[in-house]
Length: 101
Image (cartoon, rainbow, N blue to C red; front, side, top):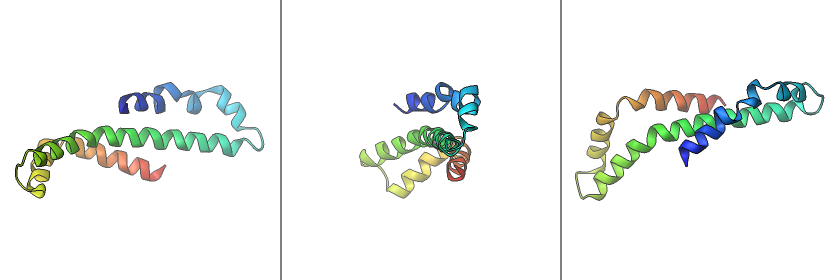
């Protein structure tokens, strides 16, 4: 579902940012703000799905470790973060982009 959403907010809707139709409609009085709003929503959706895709594996690991009766939540979180440390910079970048949108 998130992968489909990433495609929907990404390449499948790129015409909103790069298409000549959106540029023409965006130049019309009264519609310029609507086109800008749609573009902002597209960017927020794209950033949000990227963030979710970066964090879901980490959260799954955390949930499965805690549900299995393993160590405490904090210890499990630290273990999961150590295993998924590569996804954190991407998640932080996505979060910053989402905040800016």
